[in-house]
Image 1 (cartoon, rainbow, N blue to C red):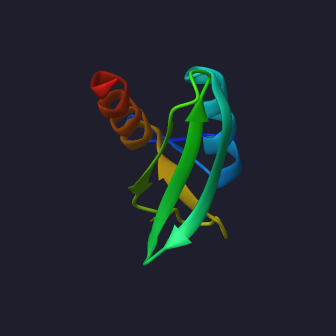
Image 2: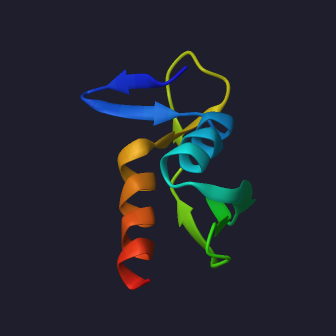
Length: 83
């Protein structure tokens, strides 16, 4: 379940993949750890592949890391502007 903290939504890795797949109509999307960051790789319906990294956040009382929805949207928007 997405957590709202100070007006910003935070999603776990599974929720982030589901969100990106639905919001940006992706064919596939996956996450992996890369040098302390989370790498998100994906493919659009137009067969364009790309990836980006985001910062993981540790939220109090949760065992798993969280990703900022604003950061995910910003990275995806920058990709969409290029293509």
